[in-house]
Amino acid sequence: MDELVKLVSEKTGLSEQMARTAVETVLGFLKDKLPGPIAAQMDNVLSGGGLGGLGDLGDLGGLAKGLGGLLGNQ
Image (cartoon, rainbow, N blue to C red; front, side, top):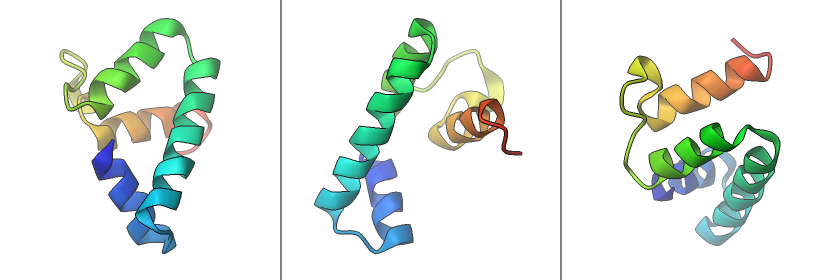
């Protein structure tokens, strides 16, 4: 999750603490809306475990791209 917080901080100019709050808020929202197994995989990826066996979705960037696809972005 630290990688994501750092990215949000860099891209938005928010302090790390504000970026962490934003990231935690968005992740909490997504976990509430996504099916349980996907929400559990988000926790695994954010803790550095990856998504073993899911190819390009096995890292944070791949997960973000996959979620973007689910939400209608290419």
